[in-house]
Amino acid sequence: MFYEVKKWYPSLKSREKSLPKIYLADHGFLENGGKAFENVVFLELLRHGKKVYYIVNGSYEVDFYIPPATYIQATWNLEEAQSRELRALEKVKGRKCIIVPYFTDEAVPFFDLDKCFKTLAPKK
Image 1 (cartoon, rainbow, N blue to C red):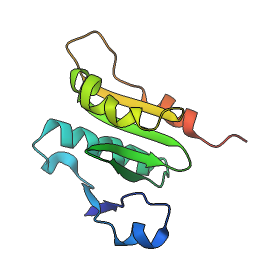
Image 2: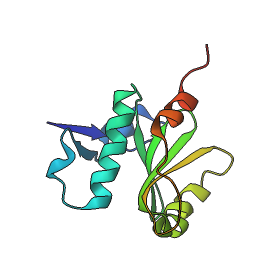
Image 3: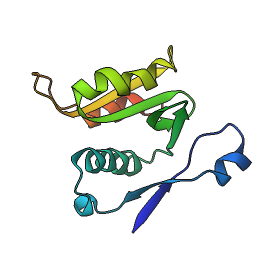
């Protein structure tokens, strides 16, 4: 089983015509660590009932966009995040940007996704 994530466009018509990114229900089929980790983050977003899109801005891509203004980058390595991943988020300054790292040589703990989703939950 797989899931499709559409590219974000303000226009619903353009969004529906966009080429989707594909995520698997079972990430065990993925060999690439970074792709598998991005898939895990997607499944967590889905589990928490989030409707997500992706954004391409020039040559940079934001992995997940949750309207109206939350941007999430999943990264296997923070060194990559400090260059490619951060450049994509720089385009959306002033918005809620979250980097979810998995692996780094530095002493940076794994991002607590439950805290992330509590932050994203609608206020009652």
